[in-house]
Image 1 (cartoon, helix red, strand yellow):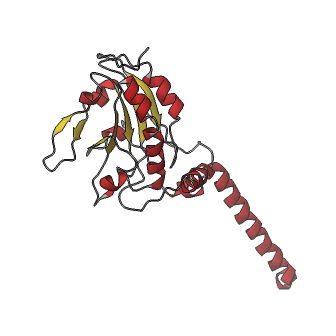
Image 2 (image 1 turned 180 degrees about the vertical axis):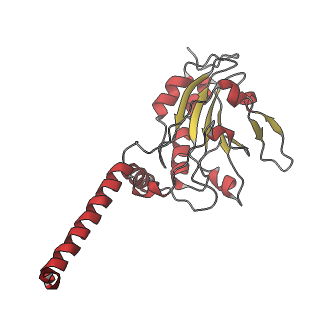
Image 3 (image 1 turned 90 degrees about the vertical axis):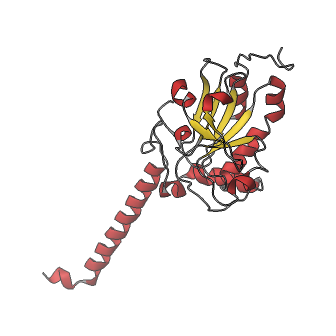
Length: 229
């Protein structure tokens, strides 16, 4: 047992533990940056979306079925993860850049939020100038709600998205629920169906604006817009 009295034995043991801890951390970081442990979204059916109850944000709110938003001319709808989040504000600004083209094509742009906290919706409106509605039951975030918790803090994609938003001059706050992931839908008129369904896989995972426009051009308007060829 004389080796127990040898200081180099303990030094080697501590070194081995340190190497093991670093290796375990590296493996954890690697796995966190794959999609292996991300919850997979389940596609929403048109019938599911049609039956969602939404509320207007007026002093005397009106409750209506979501299908009213796209029945005549289709719609682009952003399910906002958290209005105060600077990443969500950056994506909203991306979508708003499409507004002139959407107007030309006759397709409206809307957003839904899952809660009203203080002035968060009002403070979101400079970035999103379309109509915003309340989805209290969080149906637009389903059929199976997906969450990203603190794993998001070590995903390289989230850091890249954050840098891109910061670099774009966006800022935000920590008010409200921000773990349930959002998305963007392009829905055709009537029973045409869901033409694009983008579900956030991580914080700041923006939809491609070109994909949105391609989907919008497939919408069959009941009242053709002047911008249609």
